[in-house]
Amino acid sequence: MEVKHFDILLHDAEVKLKRLKALYEQYFQGIERIEPLVPRKDLDRLFKTLHKERPRNTAARFKLNQLQASYNTYQTYWGRIARRIEEGTAAAEGAPTPTSAG
Image (cartoon, rainbow, N blue to C red):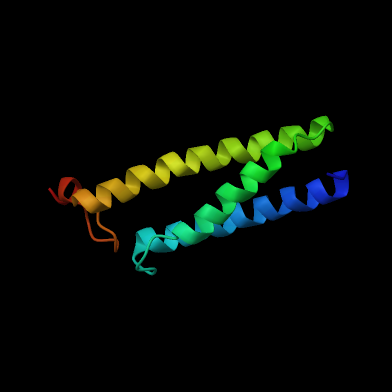
């Protein structure tokens, strides 16, 4: 894979991660009714493609690792919040949680 093509895919992954973060924030606020799983799968596929083509450029490799680490952190956070919403310990629409109401 050419360096320019890899940089384009890397920038695309960065934009998709920002968009996915915004979609999850809307989902947790109750604006969106369903979890944004399709954009999340697209981003997963893009990261797999990028990791198959490990760049020789150290800066590009650093940026890829940084984006992957951010994505992993967000995945953990999104999973935790979604689980709390499903269990009923967190409100999806901004209402106070049972623990914060008292």
